[in-house]
Image 1 (cartoon, rainbow over the protein chains, first blue to last red):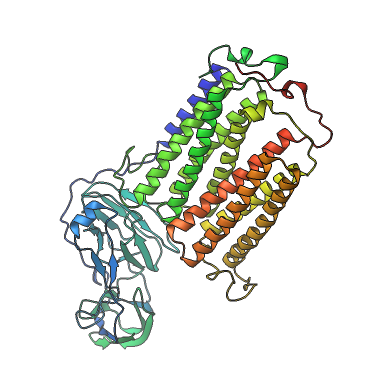
Image 2 (image 1 turned 90 degrees about the vertical axis):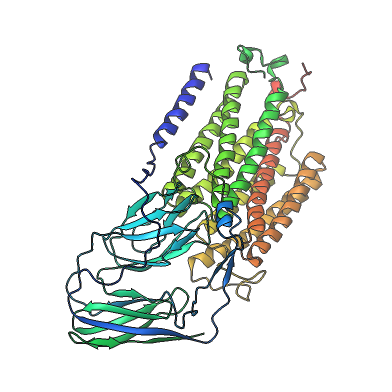
Length: 258
Length: 328
């Protein structure tokens, strides 16, 4: 083959690289906002009633031992956690079961427009904050990198569109949304495999995430009969039927055993 | 480097036999070695679950050199070794195009270059489209094909590949080597499907399958996994057959290679078992991938040798390559 042919091949390779180079780089954010981890958005906004349901999630027995996490794969993460990380997925330290997602699974009628205000999922200290984040279908989910290291954000939904984006610099923000209701979407960072959170996507605002003492409250429900479900990342889902009238508060406790 | 202008016209010697170019051959062998390293590093990416730790391509987090932390170390490391292999292949192709007299060899070199470019694009597509099984399997299979192409380039540029004396194939080594190569390639394809569909632990025990000889074959992952285990037995039979024929032929060039291949197959079965029993620990799983490539490469080399050195009938070979050529 002649030199000209060789050069043509080189040019082709160059062209293909240039064409592939069109991958969009995430634009840097305007300015990093406060890095305080926001809790999951409480029910509200499009509430259509004055009833509510509240309760406590309890756990009986001995929870599994905390998972020990090595962060040595990234020196910056290791510097943030010099003695290592421990993750307790069944967290009963506050007297009840923390991080249980409780939501109205069925019984609602009508539509509830998605809020335009974004919900924040922060990457802070090489962990996600909050661990459970909930949005309505179509509501913006703002993802922020508060760490001085790079992260990729990779949700693995079953019915929504999967994506994988990188945030190489501290303070970067990206906004995404999910079109369809889905409980739950695991999200992780492939750079730091220990990072894991869950995104709940609903088509209504009637949900809550339990606090450290295991309590929750879902406000603003219209009167009616509902099926309420409790979801935990390690434990089996539980459901209850409830009936509420306007202005009343129904009680729905859930009990888990080891 | 012999790729000087005019090399094509002067690269044949007495009676048209192509001249042996040791430097180009060494360069081709270096490319083969680098490719095997690349296959190992690529295996590490999947074994460590780092395939999507760099979400963009061809850049990595918008740069050429991101911080090599966590999964980025494996994924970007794979890209760096892949770039090196791509560069080596480019040099080899251009060198061959300029210095090689045989048209078929020049075409082989260009085919290798095309394969490595397509392989790079497939690697990019796996990242951009979030590891679709089909693309990931194609990426894994093309890696093996490319490996065979550079082995062929290495062989045809070797002294043996150019000037060795052929002898009749009395033991049927051509057929045995080609059969083993084809079987190993199919086995690697099944392995790639199993790995990228996440069926590596679909049968969790070894050597039995769900406590019996035949697992319940209702699910696709179990079916694919079991096919890979059966494939291992077929490979063992094919390579043993090659080994026995090589021994019968009494040609040390084949006997040694076939013995090494048989040893590798036994090691490979052990690594497969270790992969299951360690619940896909990174080291045995990745060594299993690389050893599979080495077995394919060895079988392919045996086939190339057999087709070059062992004519099927009473030796009828073109005169130009039938007698040794004095070294320049």
